[in-house]
Image (cartoon, rainbow, N blue to C red; front, side, top):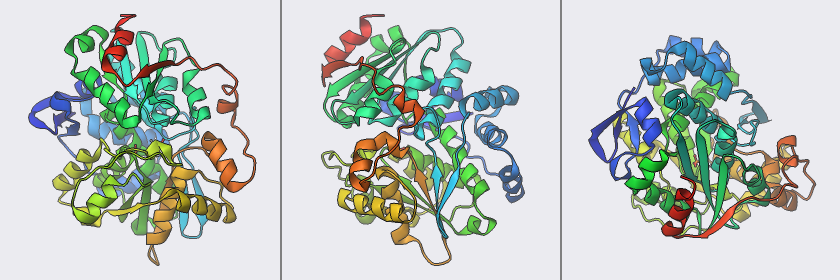
Length: 428
Ligand SMILES: *Cc1c(COP(=O)(O)O)cnc(C)c1O
């Protein structure tokens, strides 16, 4: 597999290099040189296969001979060890539930596949994973790498801006997992990570590697569950399918669009955000004008400078698609709450991120179309707000209950690169 740097097309890397480097020169994102496409008959055949077999074929179409297919399939089997079921909500709308993995969020798919790929590629060389999280990436990365030999993981998150249970899930592990609460918002954490990747000495010394949604392996993994969704939907939904994606950094949407570019029958996508609406405003006006990030109920989407957006634009450019065909909506907290109640009345208990996507979908779905929205996290991950909004207690799934009473092991730092650097070098 060959990839190029979106900021400098002369920088070309292999799949292995893209995984290890994360970002290219000038913090440019890597993008696939070839965009494989399946024939219609291949798509039909793929949709009949089981999740792991099919996913290994999809990933193999991108990765090529860099990883032998049988090994890739083993790795996929280890990573995707839990299902992605489609739950029917109304006659014309279903939810793709991506929260049945160990950290109860879709980021388990990307995090675990990335860990498998990194293990495959690095062999015995020590690496340090440095990543910023607005909540769920951190947990997924921590659990995906927990206990892996030769891997140290450092995770930054905005202090006080993620849910207490979310924090418990990944800040209580210890071992090779170090967590750092930063005084600042997610964008500040992301900026610190970027600074670290610009620090050549640190990078060399620690074998630095990023594991947030910029890593190409995470994106490729996420393509697979869009196929899994279509495989489960009724046949007649296939060409009338509208998919609504709750978006923060826009990795999930990028993966969905890559699935479409492979030939998956999706009529259109909707980019759904909360009031951190840089992209919806851009799609409406053509102007890219990020504002200060605001805290919302759907906090994993509190991102005003979405780092995967250049990939979305590149894909539209390469496929000669029109950005005007991409649906969009920004949903405020009040509407999110009302939507969660509406879903509950339909018999479906959901959480704020999925509710944002459902709202956009419900408002834009046309007669004859079939709608799918992504359930990106288990409602219990946002227990406090879900219980307050729906007025009923939620049971904690075992993965959360086990960690709820453990002490937090996080460091606490100002949003200051020097302090972070010191912490990271201290054990090197
Ligand atoms: C990360 C996350 C999102 C946003 O996904 P992106 O790929 O960053 O757009 C949505 N919902 C939940 C629960 C998340 O954790």
